[in-house]
Image (cartoon, rainbow, N blue to C red; front, side, top):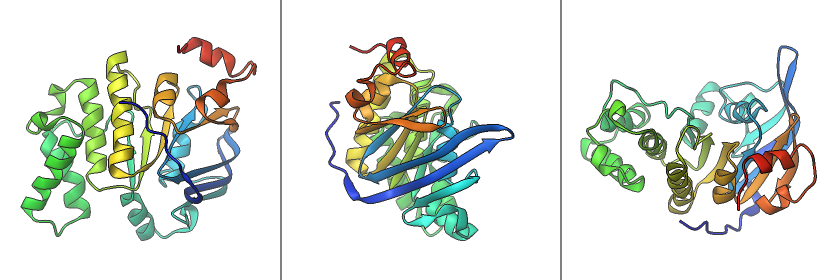
Length: 257
């Protein structure tokens, strides 16, 4: 699936980050970063393992507290919202975990129903069935509805994890290493799915990855995280058009034609 160019509304950031810092004991992971995610765009946060990429999206979703700085989601500073308001925000944010986070004891159907019955208690059985069937169709896995996670391939589990996130119709998607551990063909399929979700559901997304193929295929904009700060931001070509010794080896290792 060819990436469709997106004209993001730069007057309408759905996430706005200023001066964000986070350390664990004496190790500073994020050292005063600024970042905006605009309505409708796929923003890739790219960097080596251990550079704080996953820490960033855990802070955005309220799973971790920042040490300093401001993180606004839909205009609300997540460090100062009530627990009730934070839960309401989380329903608007879809988090696709690296390991898919499926419940092994539940069928695919039950895995998808779980967030619905927990967050939308007034739905009828017919409405739940329709929602499950719709998201399974969106990720191309309608035939797996009665299977167990153990019966699925790694790529299928990734897709079901994304489907479970989509079932609440989130406005923001946070993808944590979506292609990690997958073979090259399945990686391309997941990248295509991320682009399809953006177009079909009009999501704004942050995609955490160290996979340059994923970054190039899905990102409308790339932010390169180095030494705890965003050192380069722009299109894929703009980010890698450099002789910076911290960036060039990263590109050479992931070499892309």
